[in-house]
Amino acid sequence: MTEPTPTPSQYLISNTHYRRSQPALPTIFILHGWGSSSERWGGVIEELARAGYEVLVPDLPGFGQSVPPPVPWNVEEYAAWAHTFLEALNVHPRLIIGHSFGGRVALRLLQTHPERTSGLVLCASSGLKHAKTLKQRVAYGAAKVGNLFFSLPGLSALRAFARRVLYRSIGEYDYFRTSGIMRETFQRVNEHDIAPGLEGFTCPTLILWGDQDKATPLADAHRFHALISGSRLEIFPGAGHRLPYERTAEFCKSVTTFAKELDGAQRNS
Image 1 (cartoon, rainbow, N blue to C red):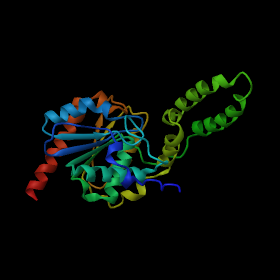
Image 2 (cartoon, rainbow, N blue to C red; image 1 turned 60 degrees about the vertical axis):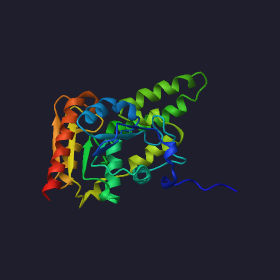
Image 3 (spheres, one colour; image 1 turned 180 degrees about the horizontal axis):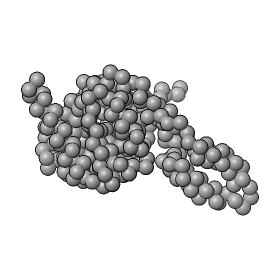
Image 4 (tube, rainbow, N blue to C red; image 1 turned 120 degrees about the vertical axis):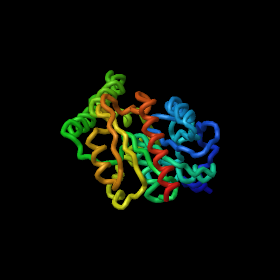
């Protein structure tokens, strides 16, 4: 008899690798971007821990040292997993940080469980649907032709190189780097448009963005700012998509300032 496929709520904590600073209160929970892991957040963890926060950063399922999901997941399932992960550790974060793909997951988590935190930091978040550019449409057509061309004898060895160049040129290198379950997961995740669910989103939100971001353009920052009522937008001149790693001290200063403002608002309420 075939065993039923585990749901995100059954995805046990033992399958997840995570980094956690020395216990303290309050806690900041970080959801990393696609292709990243908790390891990339070492500098941020140190900075925020010095500021008096406990920092919790899991490797999301399929990344870093965490086990991939048993079947391809979508945003809903990653958000359900994040909720279950916090429940399993009995953590109630004061602040959630979502970077890139992690921002998309954080938004969905808080749409379904708004009680999970007092505030959200969105950094270079994905989640907004865009019409395919002419360059992308041409490239996808070329990819189909290329599959036939590189299947010819003597040319198959060049297929991987050609695909890498093609997908990098249209900003889809993350797709190229994935395979199997995670490639289908990537497709499912990117089919989800977070915008319609932001009407009525009330979680206090700080939006941090680099004006040189090529992966999630600055226009997305302004759109999130318009969609999320009461949100604040801070733009970092000269910074790109890797803002938390490129400008760690400035990033953490913005985060801790926001966290202290939330603390003050709660004390005065």
